Length: 70
Image (tube, rainbow, N blue to C red; front, side, top):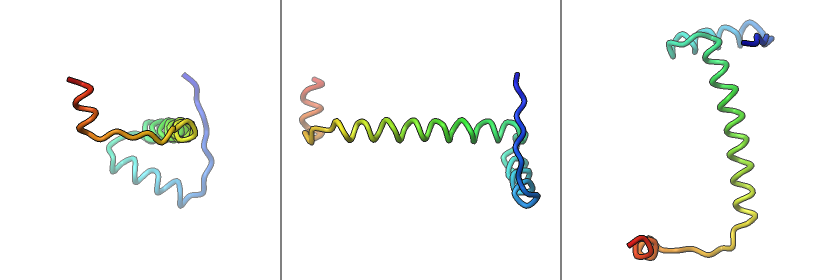
C-alpha cells in the first residue's frame, strides 16, 4: 500500500480532523473516499458531456417505454 502526504494549513487540517471524527472514520479513509469520489464525479461529468454531444433529441413518453417493455 502506498503512502501519500497532503499539505494544508492548520485551519483546514483541523476541519478535516473534525469532519472525519464526526463521520466516524479515520482521516485516511475520509481522504481516500473524498479523492476517489472526486475522480468518479469527473468521470461521470465527462460521460454526461459525451452523451449530450451524441443526443439526437428524440424523446419517449413513459407510456411508450412501458409499451415497448411489454
